[in-house]
Length: 250
Image (cartoon, rainbow, N blue to C red):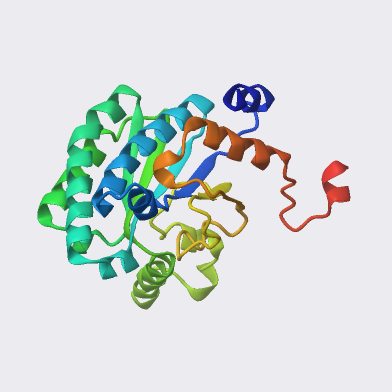
């Protein structure tokens, strides 16, 4: 009933262009069921599929998922190994579905630390979906917002040193072109599951004016109805971008 109610209230002409999600709570989901941690990560893949499908149906142009942070390497080795294996097999299995639904894949982050096998699978999936244009799915792996900004600055520093640009040419737009999300719009709505209320070094630049939505729902339990609820709350907010309410109403 809640699903239908939220669906009927949504303004389908005013959805976010870009949604980013911190998929949190897999371990707690598994622990609450007395299951191994990896079972939570496996269960999370179905939530990923459902959210991707629903975002496409809702007309969301860009969806970015935080799959693995740079800090996640500090987790137990067996868990990291399991996550990498899950990533590899997901890439191999899901590419056909992305092609079927005309979804382009982009993977961002420092991929150099990943195995050659995973890097090859990423390149293959990105290449196969290059011409898809119904939606862009961006997956952040070994990613950090600070890393992204530092990387962009280093690239600009090299170009500056070589005389390709002048200091006056470095502005926000120029920096954005060097970020791993180059060509994508800023994040309109950031969702984090599991009840945690922080952004954990995710898309720091890109979330400068994002609306935040925090839910206690654990990621494996996150359904299309939960996404609709987030969209409904987003549509009720007033995005002012530094202006007053009076200015926006005029």
